[in-house]
Every structure is written in C-alpha cells, then in structure tokens.
Length: 245
Length: 101
Image 1 (cartoon, chains in turn cyan, blue):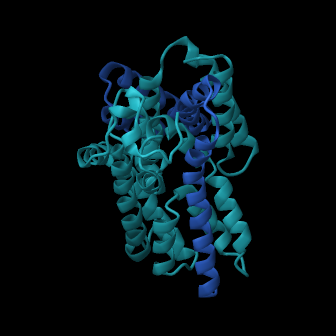
Image 2 (image 1 turned 60 degrees about the vertical axis):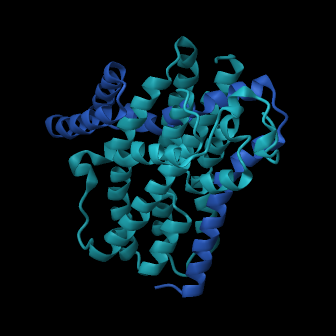
C-alpha cells in the first residue's frame, strides 16, 4: 500500500495498475444496488414521516438527509430533537458515535483505492453507505476492477434516501409499517447472501464467530449501533492474529 | 419548533462528524506503515463487519429471522444470485412471522 498523494500515473503494483474509474463501473454499481435502494426508500419514507412528527421543517429534514445521509444516526437525532432546548452537542456526539463504523469501512477500501486521485476517493466516500460499501467490497473481492462501482451505488442510494424523505414528510400522514411485508429484512437477507460469497473456508470460522458473539452481546447490553463497531473490531482483530487469509 | 439557526448548526455539525467518519478510516490507513499484519487485518474487516451487522437480527430476534436467513444463505449458495436470495429471504420472513406468531 502506498500513500494517497501519489498521482495515478505512478502506479507500480499490478493490482492497482489494472484498476479503473469509469462511467460503466458507476452504472454497474448503480444497477446492482437497485433492490437495496427500494428497501432504503421505505426506510427513508418512515424517516420523513417521523421527522414531520418531530417538527422538523421540510428544508431541515431534506438538509439532514442530503448532508448527513446516514439513516440510523438520523433516527437517533429525531429522538433527541423533541428535547427543549435543542441538545446540539449531544446530538452531534451521538451522531459521531453511531457512525463510527464508517471508519472501519473506509479503512477496508484502502487496498483498492490507495492509488485513486484523492478528489475521487473523498467524493466516493461521502456517498458510502452500508449497502453500497458491502456490494463494492464483494465486487472487488470477486475480481472487480472499477472503483467507480462504489460511487455509482452510493449515488442511487442518495437519490432514494433524499427523495423518500421528501415523500414521507409531505404525503406520509400515516405510517405504513415496512415490517408488515418483511421489507425490513431485505438488508439482512442481502448481507447474508454476500457473506456466503465471502466464505473462504474454515479460516473464516473463528473471526466470524467472535464477531457474531460480540455483536449479539453488545446489541443486548449497549445502546445504538455500538455492536457493529465492537463486533467488527473483535472479529477482524482475531482474524489478523490467527493469520487467516 | 426550535430556533432555526440552532437547528441548522446541529444539522451541519452532524454532517461534519459523519463525513469525518467516512473519510477518516481511509485517511488514517494512509498514515500507517503497511505491514502484512495490517493488511491481514484489513482483509478481515468486511466479513467481520457484515457478520456484526446481521448477527443480532439473525441470532437474537426470533425464530422467523433465523430461519429466513438460513433460507437466504442456502439460495445464495445454490444460485450465487443476491437478488434471488433477497426475495426468498423477505418472502420467508413474511410467511414465518405469520405462521410462528
């Protein structure tokens, strides 16, 4: 791995030499994410409905969805929005903690994105969400070479998220519960399928088992999304120590 | 309704710290001298994070979610198709939640 500030022309490693950043790659990422974007649309719709109940203006909820663009933290912010006076620092700190998992996700992109121009990297990561990251990582792991795949998926998720916030806030007077149709499970089903593809054999067993046990325990005992960060750290560290490939 | 300026500051603050988390991991890894150990760790992150995301739903919510995840996994194993696995998983959880209630 090299420093980011090397220009793309100075590639040495074959793995990075053959990597691209093209419109076709972005379109492929966009197409692959459509089922997940539909699922995200239903969640964004609910966010819009709840934002209206928490007395956010249309402009405020659109700004939040467009600039923060991180579902879980936005829902947490709504639960704090009803406090008077507005607990500014608490909301910002909570948002940071809920979104800390992005640090791990960004770190994992390093092997593929190290030689990409910083402007492209730091634009791509603005639109990185759990879904687009997960699809991109499995695409790269399967030999995919086009780094615009991540951005393409992220942009579709962005459009779905912001537009569904608007629809939810303006026309969603009654909450339609997505769990009623099992749609809340779409995310879990997709991630399960991606994990099946990432299974490389027995060497994965211990890291994944540790990640699962720590995550279940953390979800039970700790608030918010700590379980993702703690499970991810515990599992990956165990994997690095046991030297699994 | 809160003071508009205060609300705007809150939203901008949320946006700033969230972008810091998105950019920070990639940036930090550029400062660390790469070692085989760190590369091994990076390779392990995606799987471990995905497992951590789904584990509470799959293992500790209800039997419907556990069985539906198993169905998704089997379909993914056979078809290698994520979309089909998603449709089967959603359908399975929808039916199982009604049946197992």
